Image 1 (tube, rainbow over the protein chains, first blue to last red):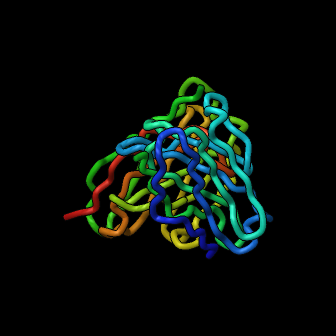
Image 2 (image 1 turned 90 degrees about the vertical axis):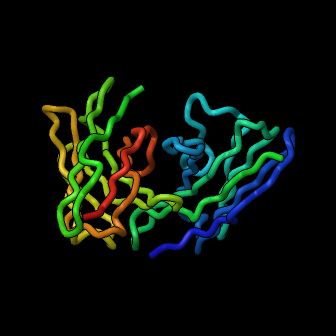
Length: 107
Length: 115
């Protein structure tokens, strides 16, 4: 099965930039999607197809994908961005795979 | 914006079948794929499988032998059956719109497997 590795936690001060990585073998050749999940709530799609934003998602959220790492970047971080973030890809060997998840803490 | 709502028993006995239904409102179930995802308490997300409105399916290989996803376009619903459950199947189960990624999600329903 295809393994996606994320750092367990990322801490960032308000107004600064948070970068959340998602590592996988040749992930740059796949489409990566990102979700935000706040406690007790369902996940919300924040980035799809590597870098597209659904309507209603702030421009502060952006994505990139190359080589063996995909990255979700949150600019000008706000307290409301504190949540768990998951990456997700489709791979022919395991269909859909989710990353291990990253807890973003706003200091 | 389409709305999704999961429904079904919150408690299932070991070795029995877990059955959930997802009702889609404010949109048609036709012309899209629909997905089930689960999340054990305190853990990450696991993709279960998806169904296209026409009935074609794709399942997580690790669950494939125990899973059936079906669709009822007349009721704008799709369903999940997970057979021979164990405590390891205890999780919040989510339904979502989309096959490649979940563009809209239900609120989730907790299913506990216990005698």
